[in-house]
Length: 257
Image 1 (tube, one colour):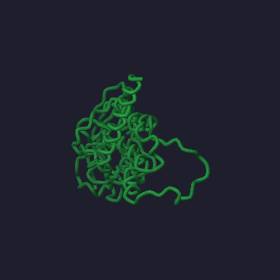
Image 2: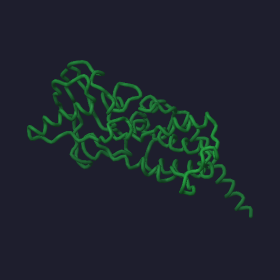
Image 3: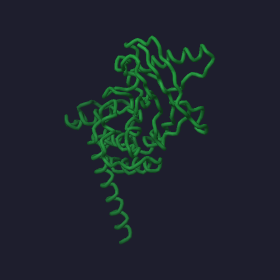
Image 4: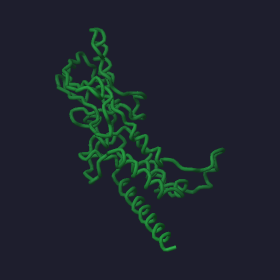
């Protein structure tokens, strides 16, 4: 199959960018989208041109680094699929495909399709951990976890931090990502001591990074390659409000004393 690609090219964050046209010829339907880009890049290198820069690592839908907009959709047309898992049989022969980087103020373009997603790392660093004694693992039966809580925690922990939720959201919100990281710890016994503090710190960092506010459009869960539900956002909001009220109560009591 043959395709026409329109790819965003931008030399650096300080340079203007534009869409450039390329032809992808003799593409196997069994290729992944990234393998197709590899073939296009081989042709560019052979002709002495600069290859298209794009993020990738595991190519197994685990690392989340392969994110890009394909025909205006985060990760492309297949639901519950990262870009590296998208196969070319999802497109028709002769199709024109538009490829762009994530579009978000908090994700500045580094080069071409590569963006800086360090903001997500800083949100995790703000509170996405538990302060417990390290060492040998406890017996699993010492910490009973309700089945529903365990399943919900695992569903939230499936987040790979790709940023598709941000790119798909009309507001550029990182609420689904942040909520997933807050929920998967907050639902487990080990995460309870810092639950309120974690929510307050991570939401504050999310706001400081310049992400937009969530208005529950629902585009985030549609774009998420792990199909994480916006129910996690409701949990985050609950924990954040609880933390805010607790802080106000502490200040009020302190003022009285």
